[in-house]
Amino acid sequence: MGLKWTDTEEIAILLHEQRPDLDPLAVRFTDLRDQVCGLPDFDDDPANCGEAKLEAIQMAWLEEYQDALDAS
Image (cartoon, rainbow, N blue to C red):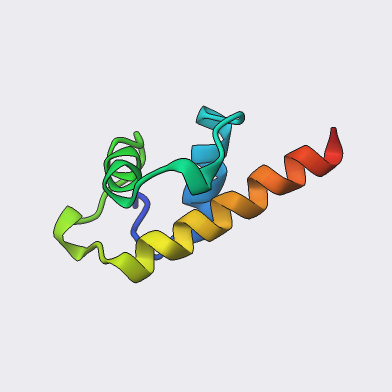
């Protein structure tokens, strides 16, 4: 089974791996939605996406981003 909108942590890790230098807070929700839908393992209905799900993904991605900054 592929990734679903509720797989917040897994999606955040993949997004961070793809763009480690990109501050997630600089990404618009429309662009974030497109990035998530473009992930190779993503297999959910784009219509099932809402602001709350995108915000959860963005916050999880921000945590990955900040952890990487703290580690360097």
